[in-house]
Structure formats: C-alpha cells, structure tokens
Image (cartoon, rainbow, N blue to C red; front, side):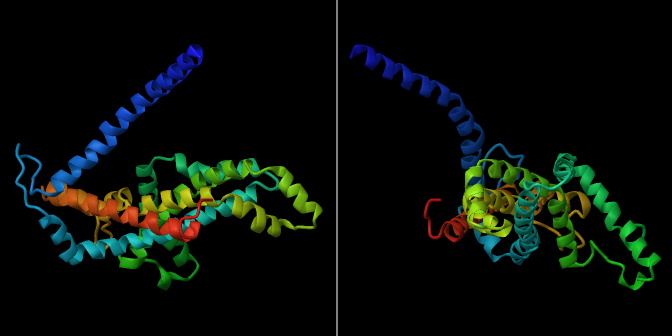
Length: 297
C-alpha cells in the first residue's frame, strides 16, 4: 500500500514538474501582457512618460463613437470572406490530393510552396503584379485589346481590400491543405472500404465519411483563418500604408499607426482589447454554428 502511495505521489510530482515550465511561460508571455494591455487601455499613456494617467473607459467610448474604427472593421470584411474561401479551398485540395491521382506529391508541394515564402517578398511580388502601368496582368489585357478593362487593383476601396486579402489566399491555402491532409490520414480506411462494398461513390464517401469525421479540424482551421483575417496587418502596411486615405486600413494597422505615429498607446491598447473581444465573439458564433449549439463533436 505504501508503495502504491509513493508511486502516485511520484507520478503527480512528475506531472506538476512537466507542467510548471510551460505554465510559467504562458503566464509571463501571454496572460501578463494581456492584463498589462488592458491596464494601459484605461490610460492616456503616450509611450514615453514613466507614469500613467488613468482615464477610465474614455478610449473605448472614443472607439465606439469613431466612424473610422467601424469603417476600418468593414475593410477587414474582405479578409474574412477570403479566409472562409481559403479554408474550404484547402479542404477541397486536401480531399482531391488524398485520392489516387497522378503526381499528387508534386501538386501537394506546389500548393504548399507559397506558405514558406517570406511575407515581405510576397508583398513586393504582388505589388509588381498589381501595378496599373507596368504590371503583367494589365500588360496582358492591353496586349489582347482589352486595355479599357485594365484594373486599378489598389485604388478602388473594395477591389483594393480584396486584392490585398487575396495575397493571404494565395499564400495560406497550402497550409490549410496540409492540416486537412493530416486529418484525413486519421480516418480509418475500413470505413471507405465498407462504403465501397455498399456501393458508395467518391462523393458519397466525402459527404458521409470525410466531412463528418473532419468537423473539428474544419472548425479549428476556420477559426485560425478568421483570427488571421481580423488581425491582417502586413499586407496594407507594406503595400499601401493604409491608403489611399484610409481605404485599406485594417484594425491592426490602425492600432499600429495610433501607437507609433500618433503616440497614443492608451487608445492603441484599447483597440487591441476591442479586437480581442471581436475574435472571442467570432469564436463563440462559430462554435454555435458548427457544433450545433455547443454539442461536442
């Protein structure tokens, strides 16, 4: 009996020791900065003064009353739409490239390749593609007599945001595909063999076996994509600086400029907390929609 007690104590001590370090790292680098961010959001700190001036919820009231903040959030809608397309396009490619088609390894590598490219390099590449005068897309349109249909990719509000968001689709669809491919490997092959014996075709297997088995992975992938869409930053920051005007300003880039251009770290921190709240609301809605009111998969 004493031996069993010692074994239990040793097992619990081992678990505590293994969990202690990651918990400390999590508290120091995630939760403490979040609490500090909320504290600063209640001040008018300019990033330089050694002390804070507490102003309560004034920064949050300013965000809610500002039309700029809401317009910026609408700009993020283009990234949200593209992120949903990206998730289901990744699922489509994963199912297609998990089947017995030729050269599927090559196509997997080909689709994943953009993800490993540096984001800044990708931004410069798309800056060249989107150039109205010298970009290859508009040159091609002019060369075939469609010069009147040359596209102003980055000057019109809606097309500019969709063009910037498309970069994420091009770069991240491969990652979504790889995650779905990993999930597909965990589905027992016996299910597909049994379905084949019952006369199920490819689409029946996808509908009744693949999709239900991957519900949780789809949910996680979709959340990661939406989270990235709401925090879109480097595309407008590198390519348009939020312009022309504020037409391509995203919520994250506006927080950056508020902090470092206008030295209003209090308001920028409030924008960060506001964005965190939006992400949590999106997660809650997604849970309700995908899990059918919170039912575990």
